[in-house]
Image (cartoon, rainbow, N blue to C red; front, side):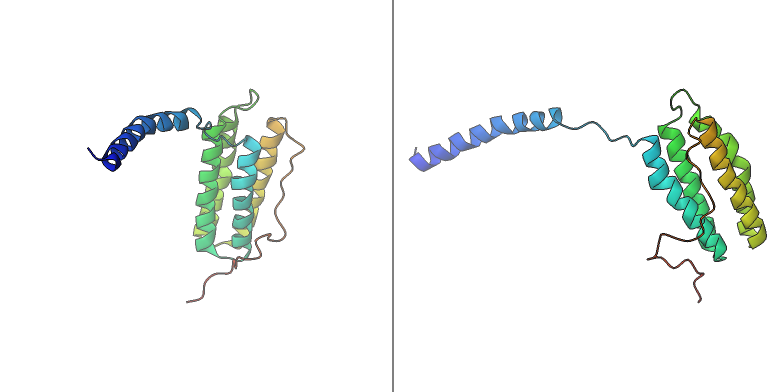
Length: 161
């Protein structure tokens, strides 16, 4: 057998034996799954949707407001799923019971394209946020109806076709 051929066989054998060991080492070193904190989820998912929904309603962009309302509902669902209880406070239960009526009122206001009803319903939803914060012993977190948009790269006006 040639010297070159023997070297290839030895190299192949080393690789066959080394690959499973490398895979096992990578699996053992895998970091734990990321679980964002309750405050992280509120800041990353709930608060931006709350702001965007307010601006969409102010601009009377009803199709976008409906979209953002749905996104806000999904954000609330993610919070409830990841943090059903926080420091023995039933977060999922509180969010579901407190937001049901204001979210339904918002949906109706959007469906009817009624800016006045939207403003009232959005104000109730915002107060609901503060009620929930107080119930969770986090009353220092006070949410208000936004007076402007931090999303300067997005046009919230209805698309003219």
